[in-house]
Amino acid sequence: MTWREETGRPSTMQQQMPAWLAAESAEASGAVLARAGLQLPGLNPAQAMLLDLEEIR
Image (cartoon, rainbow, N blue to C red):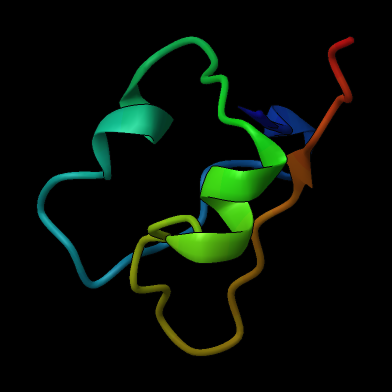
């Protein structure tokens, strides 16, 4: 998982971004994503964030 930076960094209500977002990229299995989900930052109104998910076999 990576954050697509071409849209710019969104304005958030948080002082610190989630650990996976601060890293260059992160890997998680489909089971982990289905069960635990993905912590997203609290975005301010009218903000968007694009994520790039790639299947790894």
